[in-house]
Image 1 (tube, rainbow, N blue to C red):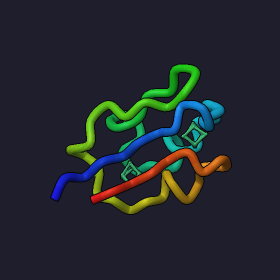
Image 2: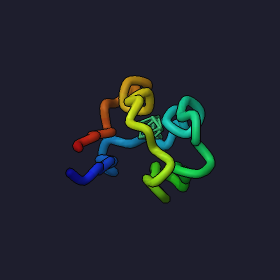
Image 3: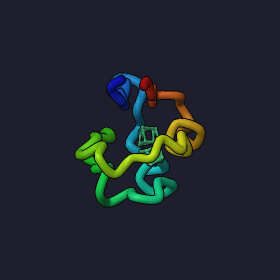
Image 4: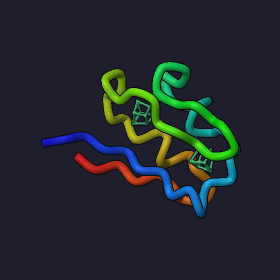
Length: 62
Ligand code: SF4
Ligand code: SF4
């Protein structure tokens, strides 16, 4: 079982909601035009990031 978070870069508008809402935002997310996942070892799969994304660009699989 491998946790994966994928950002659809064609959909992402770089709003930063994922970074803001994530309890470990600065450790996991980097916003640079579009959102990038830096390190998933801090993720506890709360799925808040995906729920707060206004364009539905975040896909979480585990
Ligand atoms: S699932 Fe939760 S902890 Fe993981 S990246 Fe999204 S908001 Fe952060
Ligand atoms: S919340 Fe969605 S649109 Fe906003 S930066 Fe994150 S992935 Fe991109």
